[in-house]
Every structure is written in structure tokens, then in C-alpha cells.
Length: 501
Image (cartoon, rainbow, N blue to C red; front, top):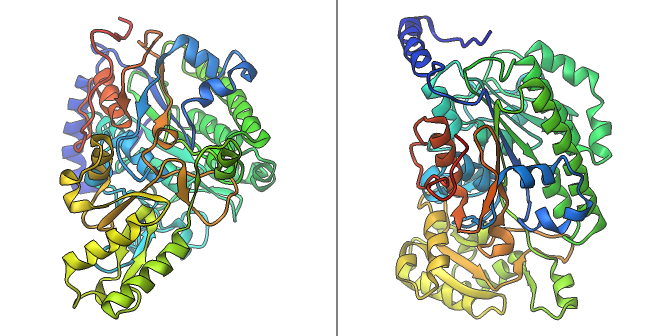
């Protein structure tokens, strides 16, 4: 039985709300028993086909051959990072509106930097470990808009919503504010965690799960995908997901590809093995859903938070222009140059997120327009930089419209730097040539897979351009609920691509 605990003075109001929600969610309106959102951390669209011949028939191929694939799905903002992607998928919004501008948020007034899901309030603590541990102080408080999972809970509070991923941000942001739980994996402890934001005490099944599984050993043997699968399966079983007509939502993110991608190149054997392993995991998961929820009872979508670039050395060996944007060295030379002009040390605090983040206490006496102009002149003289754009004036910049829109969508005046750096194609930030990374607007970072599968979905493909922000309103249309409150996306399915009736 699904339960939710509320303060006593709200019981009557909640009872009325539940009654109204139950009427709205009656069997007269068809909805799936379960929605499963699968986000793969650092998956390029072409991975669907790069390893296609090596995939089995029941994982990626099953989704491609029986689902609806949006072959030209793009990210429409920068920077293209993990937290930003997960937030955009589930809010249907962009960093400018939802407030998740990067994995780490920089308060431009104070200069303070904190993890995007860090919660410093006294009431949010870890469950199941030392209550004072910073590691458990996590919540969605920095997410400024609702998610599609929030909207499902608002439509019917009896719907259960849980997020799960190895990374805290990949579990918490998709689950939203009203979630029943979000679980992430703490590798230093070898166990799954949650916080008091969601519940007062750890569930018995989670205690047992952490005791029974030698998770450190599994993780060390490159089985992050499989332990995420096992956790997702356990949630469905223990929380009775998909057992009645009230739609539940499980948000799952597979984080292992990102860890591997940052250490090995796109064409490495390690990356290929990772995706073959993930294909096997997807096959097992789909069979589990068929058995436990029913083939026609669940709606599933698979996408990614971002893609990734080829290794610079690899491209150079192919005679393709590529190199790194060494932000550490460039920061030093930029500050040295500005000191020569203005006579002040450490004017720029960081180049985090491909942006100029100023050290505001140090620039009070500097004419601001002059400072902006000198920074842009310096940056645009670098061999790795294509454009340097003052964010507030991006709409008037003499740059392509597509780039302009990505800058505007990604800019939040409280959390973003004042100048956006656009590196040249195939250039990326870093200080070495190992592995791969992401963060730019270019297709190799922004072209992601998107497949809808299962309940009411007609098989097919479209090559028209759609965006990561279109996923949430598409789900809202399918579920017949309100789209998230900061949503800028549009439903994908229309007269050309109709769902099965």
C-alpha cells in the first residue's frame, strides 16, 4: 500500500486533495502503470550505431527496432554537463530558468562554490551513516522549477517517485522536490545513501540491500551499471512500483560510461566493453519490467545528459585540427595581463564552465566596460578560442544564431560568469590529452539519443530536430498531466509521429 506522511494540521486538506486526485486518475483515463526514465551519462547518439553489430537483440536493438527514435535530439544550452542535462530532461527547461547551470554552482556575488545538490540546512543530513557527514547533505533545493516527476506527484500524491544513480546529482535532480526518495552510491562507504530530506529513517530493505551486497568489490570490477540495475530492480520490487492503476515513476541514471569516458577515448576497448555491458544490463532490465510490470504497462524513455568529444591526440593523428584549452595556464596569463593594465592581482577568480568568473571584491575600482573589453580582447587572441561573448549582450553578438541561443539559454545572472568562452571546434578544457570530456555546444557534445518505448508508443523514427527540453512536455502530454512550471519545450509527438491508440 502506498503511504505518505503529512503534518497533522494538513491531514484534512491532503485527504480532499487525494480524493480529487484519485477521481482524476480513475481508470477512465488510460495511463501506464510505471514510467521508467533511463539517462545514460555521456552517451553520444552515434553509440547506438557505432557498436550496433556487437549488441545483442534484447537491449539497444530492442528499443531501436520496437520504439520511436528521435535521431536528431540536441542540447540547446551550454555548458553541457551532467547536472545540467539531468535537470533539463526532467524540467523541460534550461539553466537560465531552472538554476542548474553546472555541476558546481558559483555564487557570483560571494564567489562561493558548492555542489549543485548540496544542502547546508541543519535539517538535511545523511541517513544510515554519521549524521554530521557532509556527504549526506543533499537535496534538490537549488533546482528552481518543478520536474515532470513533481507534476506527477501534484496530479496524484499517491504516485510514487524515486530516483537512483551512482552520482547524487543524477538521482536527486530527476526525482524532483516531491519525490519519495532519491538514492545515490557513495563509493568511499560502498553503500547506497539517501538523506533526511526524503525520510526520517532508512528503510529496512535498503539496510538489508547494503549488507547483502559487496558493493565495493562489484564497483571495483567495473560493474557500476549492474549495481545500478540491481538497485533499480529492488526498488520496483520492494516499493511495489507498477502494481496498480496509479502511475509510478522510476528515474534511473547509468553513470559508469562517464567515468570511463573521462579516462579512456571514444575508440578505446574500454568504452566498447562498457557499452556492451550496458546493452546486457538493458536487456536484463527490459525482461524484468516485462515480467514484473507487464509488456504493455510501462512507458520507458532512454536518453543521455550529454555526449563527448574525441580525444585531441586521436584527432591530431587523423590530421584534424584539435587541441586543449588549458584553463589553468590561461587563467594565470589572463590575470597577469590584467594586472599589467589595471595594477590589481587576481581579477579573474576562475574560468570554470568556459566562463570568466570575476573576483568581485578586487574589481570595485575598475571601469567595468573596460575590464570586459580587455578580457574579450585577450581571450580572442588565443589560438584555442573562437569567440568570447559578454553574456548580457549575447543577443547582439555577431555570432551564429545557434551558438547565441545556447549562450542565452545557459546564462543565469546570479550563477554564471559574465563572459562566455566559445572554444574552436574539437578543442576542450583540460591540462592533458588523456580520455575525453564534454561541455561545449558542438554536436559531439550535444547530439544525444532519445528513444520512447512501451505503453502506447508506435515504432518509428524522426530526423527532425528536437531538443532535450522536449522530453518533459512529451511525457506530460502522454500522461495527461501539466508540464513543469518552467518548461520551454514542446511535445514531440504530433500528426506525423502519433502514438498507438
